[in-house]
Length: 65
Image 1 (cartoon, helix red, strand yellow):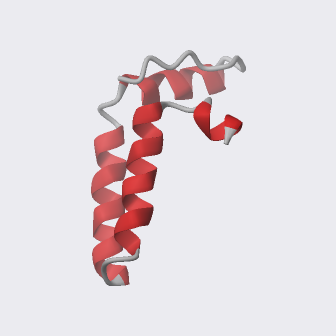
Image 2: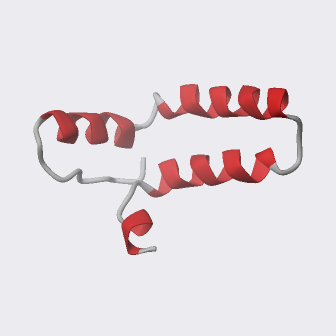
Image 3: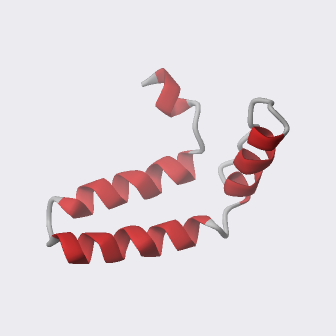
């Protein structure tokens, strides 16, 4: 739980939405939802920060945006 709490809250919410949706729909619809959420994540500042931190080999500083 501590590890998940250290991640971007917005990114965790997108992942949770994808997983929860998977229990309510077909595989094909679930994949469409996952694709939509994945593309939505590219607008997040936290996605940019996470990728930059990875390249710079430092811990990310998420702002939950």
